[in-house]
Image (cartoon, rainbow, N blue to C red; front, side, top):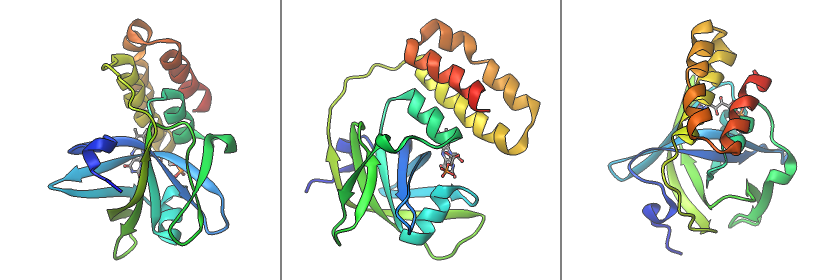
Length: 194
Ligand SMILES: Cc1cc2nc3c(=O)[nH]c(=O)nc-3n(C[C@H](O)[C@H](O)[C@H](O)COP(=O)(O)O)c2cc1C
């Protein structure tokens, strides 16, 4: 299987993807996480306290799902997603692992790490993957602005500082000017989930 990272859209820098994981008792989870590619290596930095952190600690597996749905970024960052967002693939040892059913591509990784801490820094080793669709997507400023806004929203949820709310609000012009209904709905959803 050709697991060349470029073909999967995992380029140098930080790739914002939806990471899917599963708990030992089989419950799937999705959250936006940055997959860092530098000097040929792939890494994640996952903060203690999230479900993603616990699941990776338990199973040492995660899947990167390449997705352009801003609503899914918002929902998976700020709440739980519905079960029908997932489909299950079989790992090499026959276990079910969740990926996003409607993604453009997914890649399953083994996470290598030595110790737990407030932040889990893991190197990622590709296991298997699938490219489902090669979508053509020009840059859309509203999509990028939603991503910036939801990152601030995750900080607001932890620190409850008004400065984050003001920064989130500062993206509204760009989102309403450049966005389609999906980006506008995703932005509105941020305020409903805060
Ligand atoms: C675009 C984006 C990128 C993010 N990247 C990371 C990351 O690299 N590491 C991390 O720990 N949290 C990251 N977060 C925050 C998590 O997605 C957030 O804490 C989420 O609530 C975790 O969900 P969970 O408890 O279901 O795992 C990111 C959020 C967004 C919106």
